[in-house]
Image (cartoon, rainbow, N blue to C red; front, top):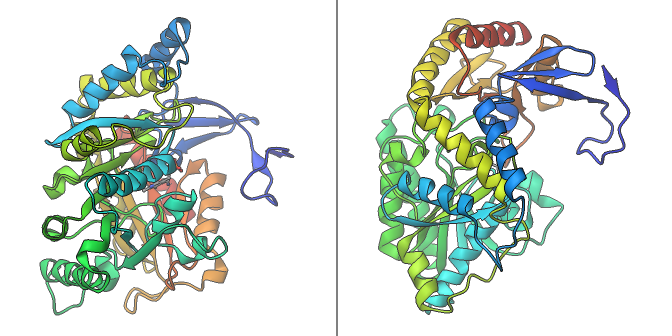
Length: 438
Ligand code: PMP
């Protein structure tokens, strides 16, 4: 099943399986074994594999033009994609900056925030505030805002100043004597305290995933939290950067997760589902006032990458958006999401080692515990999440596991992010195989 590899993979000790082909929600390896892709890779493959419309659009674009550097040209396909993204973005967002993935999008957003304050004459703003148990990418800036001390530690000193506050982690952190709203207010008060300590006039931006993803098994915000965060940021002139690289582009049932919170960020990062896995692509969506500050100031964003706005990536992303719109896939994510929630409840609602089931749409997290009453985690040395992944793979199922110790907290989590095109029968099969693995 596995073969030696000379590709420099992340886990060098591990033999790798070879993926050979993909169709619908299924991947096939070199031995002909098939896997249901219940995680969309890492919440990427929103239309599954081999989608004919996306493939055709990419072929047509390759035949016409693959690459033109943006210091010389824009392309029709990049402009069309930008129009679609702005027409569907929260009101007030006016421009799109294309990059090649999630970390690049976060990196660009951080630099946009910094340059914005330089442009408007507030260069003393040097601090970011972000959240613990978050993930924003692996490049140095993205790593610095990410709330995972273990990932950051060996790469210190990181290049930017970041203060971390608590994330929305209702299952663990909401006290029994407070409502969800009160818990949200407590979190916002903590953020407010951090701002006051740094001095509001010194803070550039608050960076948060709208719905947490890759660190602690899908952390959904409590009602009113982001509205209060938005107000607090506005009061201090601080930018709100929402990272929707994982939770965005339809995954939670609306194109952007922040729509469900009733807030518009100043900058929003998207990637993963944007290209659906057909091409690496990411983007920063920016509010008009940020873009205007650049326009009225130096007129230049001091940043750039060789492949930004790559025509084939834009063609793939445009085709993904057109399929989502044509086939009513956001509505389908909401419906199938409810079905998945019910199936998970049926399979794991009474399971002695499933502490929490959470998520929105087709973005679901399962938190495993040694004991439901005390919510105590399993010993991290047992690497339960990794064992669930291998059991699932053995039964032909791809799920995204998370575990280990993050900011002093451990835990085993499983993330599900099946393609939007998954049928009810496929979702049933996913949950059945997962139940077997767990
Ligand atoms: N932000 C979030 C919220 C993510 O989940 C990820 C990837 N898991 C990234 C940023 C980084 O994206 P990439 O791996 O494409 O660089």
